[in-house]
Image (cartoon, rainbow, N blue to C red; front, side):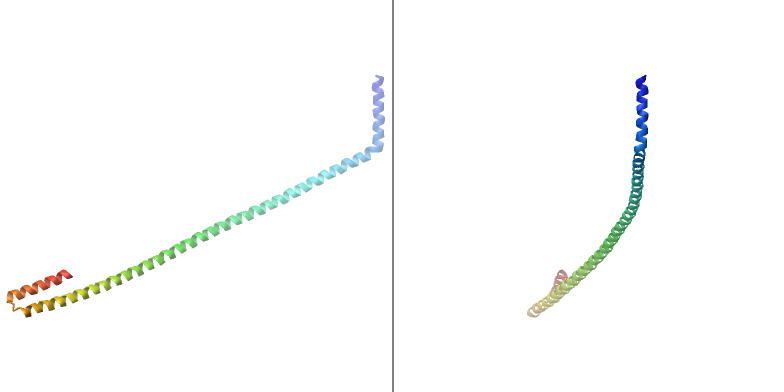
Length: 157
């Protein structure tokens, strides 16, 4: 029991000595540490608020960028549609020109063919006339020769 009382007395003496010499320093150190922790906490909260501000700003910019990209894509689609219409219109015009040229060529060939047929008719008529003149024909033979000439002209057409 004496040991317990002696230890208690030593503890109290030690406590009062530490309190007297070191209490202010320990208390100052604890207060400084508490202030540092509070400051760090305030800084962390400020950084968090700043980060949230940046996040909101980034989100807004991202939304604007997405909206702008949609606008650009829509403009490109509209431009492509317009260009498609222009290309189709140009192709139709070119097709019409080709058709007109083909019709003109057909008409030219038709005219050439008609001229050739006319030339053949003239030749046949001259040939028939020669035959009539060279030979003295009967009326029946003459009619037969004219019918043959008309038949040949019909075949040429």
